Length: 284
Length: 312
Image 1: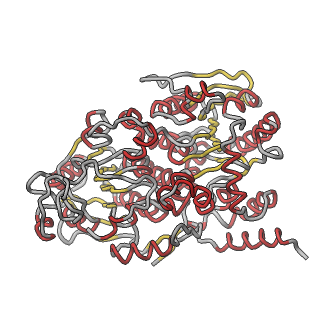
Image 2 (image 1 turned 90 degrees about the vertical axis):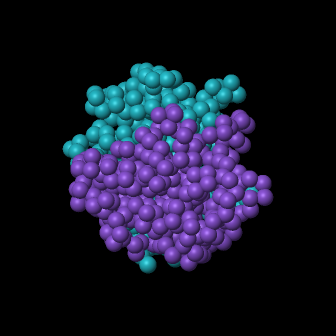
Image 3 (image 1 turned 180 degrees about the horizontal axis):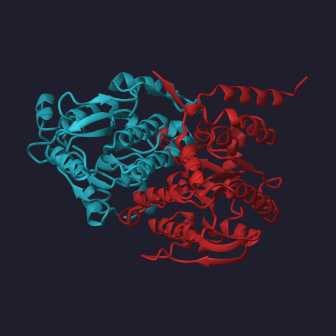
């Protein structure tokens, strides 16, 4: 993981459910579950799942595409879109500076990568978020690229597979960031009206405005084990309510129990599960 | 010689003309209407103006949904419960008559005194509140009644039970339901339009915003706590993300700003209700004659066009 993890500029700050064991250190390749440490190529081999304890490390968008799509099948769409700065937003630093820094650090234009792909020869469209780009926050670009991915899937008559990792709406774009919620929802309505399907995969963390819009609206909703998927982050809930939070607060396992998820799918099974679902929805 | 305020207004309009809003749909046809609206407003709100809006939007005497509903509607009849789990007092739903037509009203509801404030959970809804709203929307659709919503919430309630009952999904589905409706819809931001909890019931053919209401992606305190690492910097945060009505209008997020009596809606609730009622009726009349399918398509097109982009 890059330094993008250091600061989370999002609507609701997320926090790992499991704290790293004491003395576990902050290195991104040190497992917060069991303290094992890996070289980067070892983690790439294991799909970034800890072989010792099964902890799912975060996956960057391009690596996720490689994990899911058939080799050579991915063709990126709308990669040239960039955020504008309609509010001329300035906190401790200008928004434009944060954007430039995020692009430099991640090599991405914004927090989502979209395009055409095949999964086990079944054609689909992919929309994959990257938490390393400003906490995976959703502004105009994320909303527009997701909406265009819906259009592209509808035009091709194939399902859209969405993989989310987001702290919520991007504060620096103010009210226009909030408007990306109804915008993505309108796009899903059009996709579904055309007979297209949305398969939504929630990964750690999917919170705030992304959970309160397109991530929750899949025809099928899946999550990775241990993924935090809450509207409000644990810290906000603890501070507001002064309630003691359950150990599994907001996690995929709790959401599954309460009926908000169709299945929890370990990363190693995600590609075959998506391939099966794509066929069930008539692709490939 | 034009006044300084007029110069600033002209500058804003020329800037707006140059803003690359998505697909160019917002700007061309709307400049004239915006000009009319902006003429009524002050010039570019200052940081002080914005903070004054925040304070007025949260004023303890500000009229709430029920204060308006009982003044604007004839034969107001409240509907309770989400038909599944509970009746969330932070959201009200009702039938009523508005100038000769039956409408369905949905709104957040804050409490006036300490006891009612607690009962209404400060206007912060649980998922049950949004399901209650969806139930009322389905009723409107079934009978062809227009839907009017009133938005006044600091945000959806951030609690353990709210998460367990599916807060994120409920907010998403409530927006879906509003996107699908074929009946005319008008949403009014009458106080605090706090984030997802607000937009959950604000996806409409016409969105109105009272002059001193705020509409934002996060509370000033929340934004300050994250970006400035100090909730005390709320004024700076509000000045940066601009939740005031003038900016929401300029960005194409609301369709019209509804004037309030001098000093704010709480100074004269009857007059505030008269002005709001007039604006709601005008907005309804604007969309009532349309073909239902076209109306829904235009509603979707409006939201699809929201945002500002650049290219690499």
